[in-house]
Length: 133
Image (cartoon, rainbow, N blue to C red; front, top):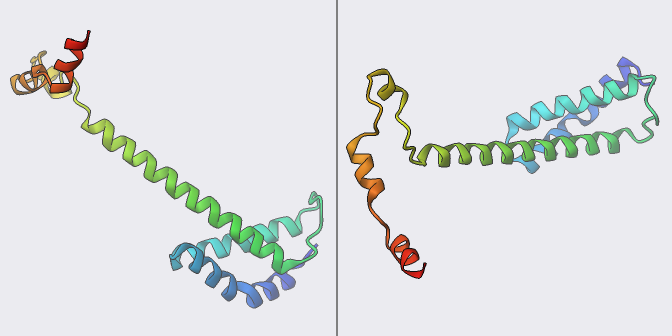
């Protein structure tokens, strides 16, 4: 087990280089600072846990591995958020024939005439598909 003084010593010795490493990887100093703190928290949790399967034999290597894994997780999360927001945008652009909540509240159960006329127009691809049938 690693004591509080040992963790403080490691923090003082490696915080700057770990944060610089994460800043280069992520190109975001604020996120790098957060992940640096998370790296040391995870180190403290692992080294202070009696249930740890293997003791940490190379502190610096362990810190870099945890920092790298946290950076990968962060980037994956950002990609997932970007993909989800793109899906929401595409869904918002999809026309819907159902009346809007405002139309229902006003007693107007049919879509607006402008939308109906746009939707009733046939595209050239649609006309070609009907000819091929």
